[in-house]
Length: 276
Image 1: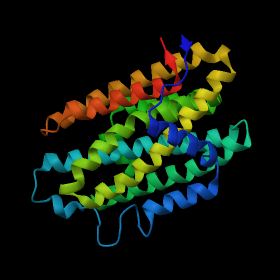
Image 2 (image 1 turned 90 degrees about the vertical axis):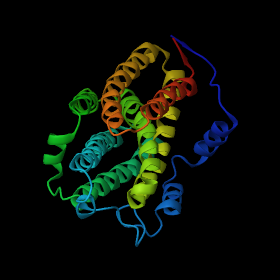
Image 3 (image 1 turned 180 degrees about the vertical axis):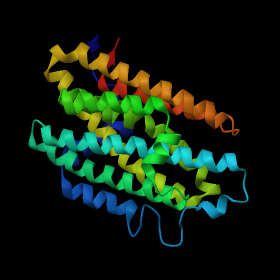
Image 4 (image 1 turned 60 degrees about the vertical axis):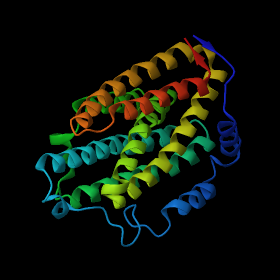
């Protein structure tokens, strides 16, 4: 493996400069989230509640179960991120990372809450039962691997790569696509997803920034970290292929969503300066 100079677009360069000054500031996080969360409750504005179970009664049953499955899958991923970001915060090697991860813990807790609320609107009041019934087993297997890496091995760098890049970085493309899909059929839930997307972009920015710093300053970890990221990315991609197959059965554009996921992976590697 070789580490090259980062090739950035002008927009990425502007974001990196902004991140370098603001990424680790709690006050910046507070003002930033206020801009898109505003007066929302459970991620949506007053009068713009997501559709509930009753709204799906006139629609095919399979569609309802697909919506529940998508929400349960999202909740499962956010539960993983909440647990692991809290652990990473406790083991952060410096105050900057600890301050940032403290804000991410709150973000992840909010995500768990909004997806739990969405499931309740859909008539699923036992979120863990919904996860066991609907969530893709590959996501649960990924969660077990990430938890072991973070909670048992206590690998901070590997945990950030696995969580902020493999898990959240690739899921970002799916959230973006899903939000666009719901804009017409369920605008309230689309608003919820837009808020999650805004948070995830910031989390990915931290992941890229932090892993890049580690690769530059701890060259001996290059192969280990790159291989770790590659392995966990493959696990997530396998899960996303299953999700894409389910989406295709409802006539959704699978090429679009998978294209976004693959582009996200390529972008992360490019911004990290990694070349095989």
